[in-house]
Image (tube, rainbow, N blue to C red; front, side, top):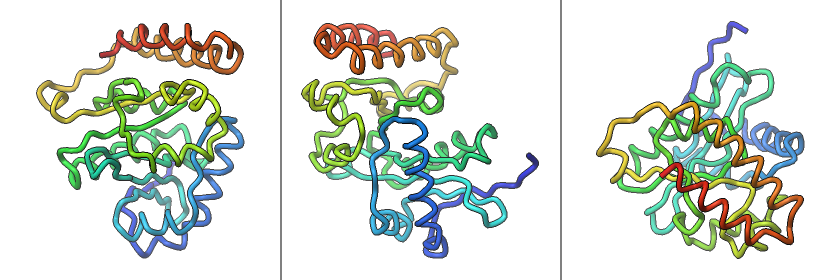
Length: 228
């Protein structure tokens, strides 16, 4: 598909896209069968009005979206709600939107740690290229309002069962104090393969093997040490 797509910081002129944004997120969650926290229309409108959202348009047609959230008195920033319309997938658009959201986060909150939760290998790869590292949930924000947002996720019971230490989502963190001291390096292919095995293992531990989740938690922590 030869399509020219504009990736923009959303503004008031994009408020008419709120319904299709929410519908696209809902459909993606249904198809994936994985967790995407729900957001109401007013919340998305607020992000757009505040200039804290990224929208992708193909000649005026909605193609993708992402927004940023602040937590813990702006010590943490999350890039959330990343979505690409199905017909525009496979073009590297998710990566471009994510990078734009990352750049916006760094500009507006240069000292904040940037984090995200994801169940998708593709997003993990994108995050890795930007300098994110997998971390335990204890290294993310302790802002209760953030974790309340997980209540609408289909995997919320797993998060609660593990005392909010683990879930099918993987927590990834960009720490500017650490990352800016060294040049970004392409993530080795062997690590990408470990990511895949890691995600598969988490699914086994938390979905099929509930009674052995404590042992699974310990093994997940050992695997995580490979990345940091």
